Amino acid sequence: MAMKQVPLSGRVVFVDWHGVLSRDPFWASIRESARHPLHAQLEENLSRIFAGDDANAWMKGRMSSDDVIEAMGIHLDGRFRDDFLRRRLHIDCARMRVNVALFEVLRKAKAVALVALATDNMDCFASTFDQVRRSGKRRAKASAKATTMAEWAFVCDDIIYSSNVAALKSEDPATFFGPWLHQHGMAFDDALLIDDRADNCAAFQQQGGTALRWKMGINDTAEVVDGLNRWLEALPHHAAPAASPGIAGYPL
Image (tube, rainbow, N blue to C red; front, side, top):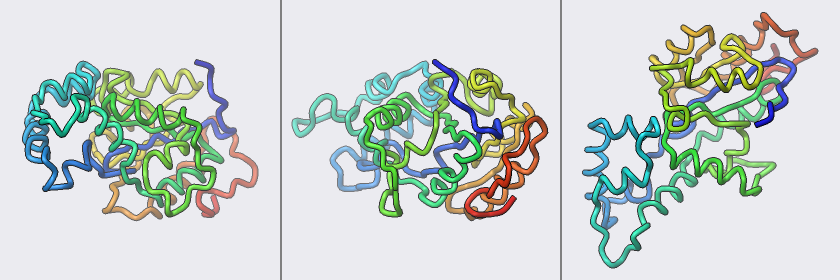
């Protein structure tokens, strides 16, 4: 893969998905409908998956989404095709509701830094994200009416996900982030991570990166704007772009 052109600042903003850009679960259309015929089965079996080692194996790519669906052993009656759960999983991933205000901030941040998703996540999410971006149906002017992952995925320049790199952010940040940073001619001190988990932020900082702990529904978007601008003010290895306007209109 060719190295993507890096902005003059030589910087990247990594942003987490669940808890930061979205709070929707897998199979949201089933799990959020108590009357759905598969609701009870799915909730019971997913609880078992996430209570054991399978969730970790799924996030690290040792189990695929198809493996997990098979392991759950959910009975599908004549109303459903055999591939219903797989198809619904991808459809619901594309329809995950997002934090529009934060995506707007990230879109403006692209003027001075790359923006990449960095998520401990499964193959189903990553393949849906990639498919949406390859479809060519980008919305150049996504508005407040655009509220789903499929409508905002184009804002991100790239994605790193644990099921591809076989590592979690908190357990092995060098393996998770290192190859991507090297490929783009960067180091950890060129990067900012926006994440809702304290252990992810601490692991990233231990590698020399800057971390901003932020949780959707708890923190205000202005905190991200302020954190981004403070980070961009400190450019130890790169000259700051002339007359930088900052993020979201905030002056540097």
